Length: 275
Image (cartoon, rainbow, N blue to C red):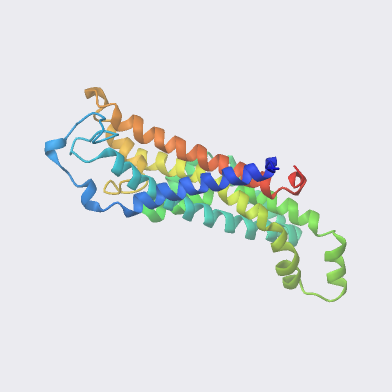
């Protein structure tokens, strides 16, 4: 008799398919050669067709291939910024929960300060202060996305400090570093990975938004925000495909990654282990 998959197994299969779809989109953008998106003025301003599914832009570049390359750039920036933010969140959260009251107070105040400023405004200010470009964009996104996970890590560590096995380790003479590496960090690993994935779509959207406004990546980079910014000059001429298709693909990938993070959270959650 054929055994039916339970909810957890189906969710794991869907999550793997989503992850493969995101990786395929990234790999496709990386593997596309520069010659494939070179200007071809004979094919300029063509609407969507079988030969060019997303149409071509004012320079005759295939918009589908250029969007895939731009998506790979956005994914790279999103991964780097999310990873920096997640590591910073773990470090600050653990420091706040295990340090003195003064350290906890300073970190809590810093979290409230960062969360009190709109992310877009802070990212633009940091990017502008760092001279724009990739370095400023990474710094801006990383600085603004660690606070939520840091609060979660802080609360989790403060709860763990009173657990019997940690108190027993301290009575046996184990150092704080030993307790951190053998008890706290393994327990925090699921929160770290889920927080990393859930930060990912926000980082991609902020990268696209800041680049669209002209404070992010330079114009020669084929990022989605740059493509959308350039398309604004030609929408009034009826070239709607320059904005619709890249924007729709960006939204689809962001929703896919967000759903991937939610599925990962459910899979890791021990309360759903028997579903």
